[in-house]
Length: 77
Image 1 (cartoon, rainbow, N blue to C red):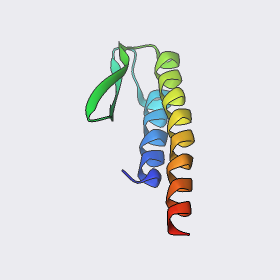
Image 2 (cartoon, helix red, strand yellow; image 1 turned 30 degrees about the vertical axis):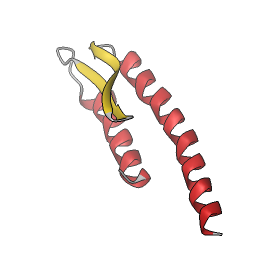
Image 3 (spheres, rainbow, N blue to C red; image 1 turned 90 degrees about the horizontal axis):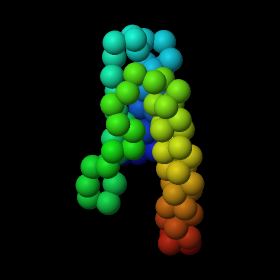
């Protein structure tokens, strides 16, 4: 998924958790990486835990995304 789409999905998830998630809602954070689905945060109603899981994954993706972009740029040169 293009990085712009990833950021829109990330922002939408944060918005949902922060303003639309109800006390009875349970959410989980799953990611697709390395050819498999991985659980980053099991089902919970804890908004802080969900936000933390998203933030940790987003930081990691930005770090690797920059690396991939740097590799593409150097390969084109």
